Length: 360
Ligand code: SAH
Image 1 (tube, protein in one colour):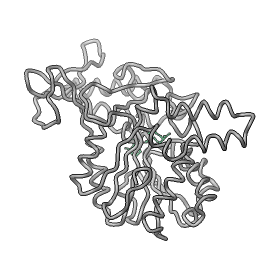
Image 2 (cartoon, rainbow, N blue to C red; image 1 turned 90 degrees about the vertical axis):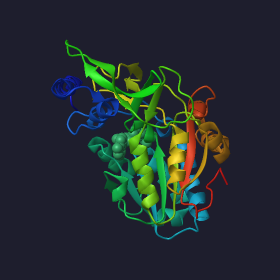
Image 3 (cartoon, rainbow, N blue to C red; image 1 turned 120 degrees about the vertical axis):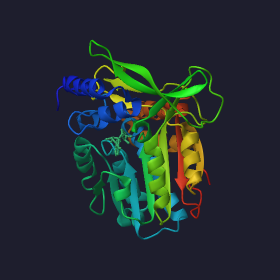
Image 4 (cartoon, helix red, strand yellow; image 1 turned 120 degrees about the horizontal axis):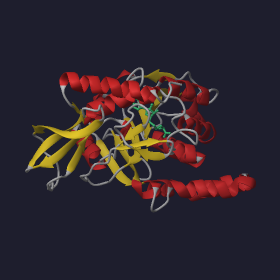
């Protein structure tokens, strides 16, 4: 594992770049901090979980992956149960979600389990290793890894992305004197990184922006939608992430280390960087590309409609010694003041395929 101090190397390189060529857009800073091949955040080990920086739904409760496994089964049937079928996951982290999906399918929908070709889209070397370990013995066919969704061959597909979009770099614009200016990262004489304002940009954004407003734009999302739209075979994609259903202004860039918020500029590469997913923007981009969109709905509504309570009760009955922990974990996923409302679920699909549950 690279030492925490590697953040200083990356910071020094960013400072050098700024001193040589001027301030860099927030999107470029974000990209370097997470994706630098040597010191970027995704090259670290121990990112997700108690000993890492943050926790995600599949790591909180196995019920999450089990319900999404059932979602895959019903959606696949709705698509006409194609014999050739891909199970694609974007940013699978530790591989827990896909393992729980496959475990569920093996029992609940053996034909899909046997036919599914698993494709994982993952940039991180350490995460790829963790995924290979997690999936050993769970997939019927050899698992394939890709750096980009565009590299996954075209075939009927179910695509899952939990907390993937929030990890894609964002650009920030700030409203000043009735115009938008790009937010950039500059450095002080002492070598500290600071936010500043760059050049004026022309853009059309929904809503009236008050003076001082910050808008966030995510190019990676546009590219992803274009890749989905370019596929010819039927596809249903499920995006679960955190962010508002309706477009909202605001600076939502957040950095986490050790389960606590930290300064995003202090030690790039040593902390997780995310920002809200603007679901309305994703939906708009998908519809403009000719895809159909269902939702978003809150994670509480989504998991509730898929049968969270029944599933958790069954698991508790089968494991009475762990019943309290199982219940607590399930409740956390749908907490009205936490994950249950902050997180949303939205489906994006080829219009010829029927609405997946629970939108159908
Ligand atoms: N879905 C997992 C992990 C979420 S963390 C879970 O719910 O636990 C984000 C994941 O996306 C990590 O696996 C990270 O390595 C991966 N990732 C981030 N940016 C990526 C990109 N541009 N392409 C592919 N994978 C990426």
